[in-house]
Amino acid sequence: MDVWLRNSYEALAPLITAGRIPRRRVWGMLLLRSGLTFGLLVSLATWFAWAGSRAPLQAASAWWLWQVTATNIVCVTLLVRFSRLEGLRLRDVYFARGDTWRGDLAWTLLALVVTAVIAQPPGNFLAELLWGDPNAPNAMLFQPLPV
Image (cartoon, rainbow, N blue to C red; front, side, top):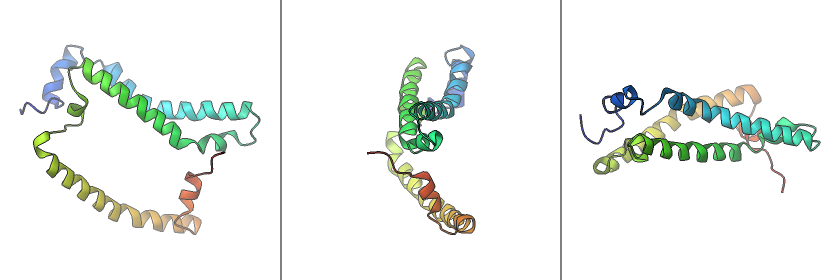
């Protein structure tokens, strides 16, 4: 096992057995991402309903980018904290390796291009089929925010 694979199963198994990586922490992080985003949506919708909005859920959903951003900040902060408790750095969690980053970047860019080429046409076709316009999902997703 390479030393840099500090986040491999072989390296983490003893930490799990010793209780340094509690199962509740792993499951909690998995649930937190969706739960916090949904909780922020419901909280904001409740606030809009209290403020007299006729469509509180729609008004709250227009702020989804900010809700996801807040969730990302919380999740990354917790990842850093929990990584340190487990004797890792955040870069260890993502398997970052200094001597292969150029090759890793090339593979990542290639994967992004291939994914875009494979994923974009069916999405456009389906949007055209369902709504008559490939940009209709964007209009639903990105709603105007109040000034």
